[in-house]
Length: 225
Ligand SMILES: CC(C)(COP(=O)(O)OP(=O)(O)OC[C@H]1O[C@@H](n2cnc3c(N)ncnc32)[C@H](O)[C@@H]1OP(=O)(O)O)[C@@H](O)C(=O)NCCC(=O)NCCS
Image 1 (tube, rainbow, N blue to C red):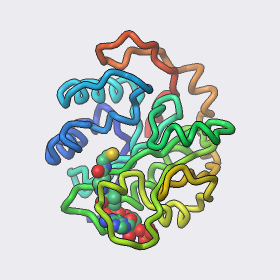
Image 2 (tube, protein in one colour):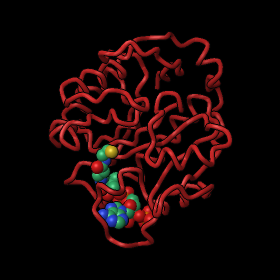
Image 3 (cartoon, helix red, strand yellow):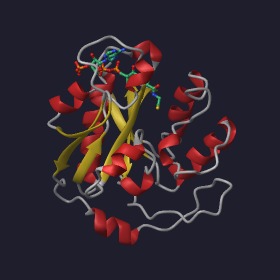
C-alpha cells in the first residue's frame, strides 16, 4: 500500500498513540515531548508526558507529518515553529553561533522499528516540508547527523541524516557537534497559505497541560488539510 501522511491532530492522535505505545513510550517514555521542553524545565515520567503531548496536540501546538500505511501510523517527522520546539540538541554550541532564529524547526523522526530502511523517514520529511508550505513557509532549520555512510545505532539518527536533508535542498550552515550540523532551507508558501505572522496573531494562548505555570509561547494555528 502506498504511504500517505496526515498532520498530527486530535483525529490522528489514536494512531500516533498506538505507534508510541508499541515502542514502550519511545526511549522508555519520552512521548516525543523532549524538544517541546524549555531549558531547565522540570522533567516528568511517561504518563505525564503522554498527557502533555495530548494537550499540545489538542491545542494545535505539536506538529508532525504522521506517515500511514493503510490505517496504521508507521512513523513521523516532528516539526514546528521555533517557539514550539525550543529544546534542540547541542543547544549551548547552537546558541554560541546564533544569528537569527528560524521560523521553523525539524527536530526529530521516529519510524516503526519494523519499517526502517524503506525510505519512510525520507518520505516523512518531504511531507513535513509540504505542511510547512501550507502553513505559510519561511526559513527552516534542521540538525542532522553526518556519519558519512557509516552504519550506526538508529537512535543516534533521530534528527535525520545530513544526506537526507542535502538531497532535499538544505544547505549546511554550521557544525554544532562532532557529527551534528545546522542545515537550512527557505520554503515558499503554498498559494492560499496563511502566512506565519497572520497565523500567530490568530492563535490562542493556551496552557500546555503540564504541571507548571510557565507562560505558553504563541504558535500558528494548525492547517485544516
Ligand atoms: C533513524 C530513522 C529515523 C531512519 O528512518 P528510516 O525510515 O529507516 O530512514 P530512510 O530509509 O528514509 O533513510 C534515511 C537515511 O538514513 C540512513 N540511515 C537509516 N538508518 C541508518 C543507520 N542505522 N545507520 C546509518 N544510516 C542510516 C539511510 O541510509 C538514509 O541515508 P541517505 O538519505 O543519506 O541515503 C529510524 O531508524 C528511527 O526512527 N530511529 C529511531 C529514532 C528515535 O529514536 N527517535 C526518537 C525520537 S528522539
